[in-house]
Length: 100
View (cartoon, rainbow, N blue to C red):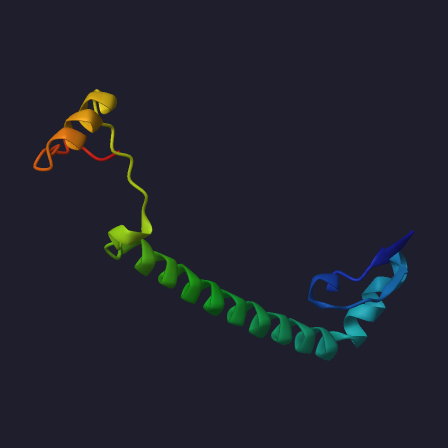
């Protein structure tokens, strides 16, 4: 049976018969250690970048938001009647109960 090297996850592309893999592992220790170190460095950098992104997102979520970035829906009861009153009386106003 042909199998992949157990160090495939760090970049080793070697395949061999199952009975030959131990020889490859013994001869390839330095190469595998180097590939493993390179993969660890790559993953450490990835973790660092992801941490930075998470911190940035946490800051954005915690920051008070500028109201101008939102659309509010103002529900005015009896809108048509209020509109007619506003047309007739320039000092007519409506107080807002809640914004949704």
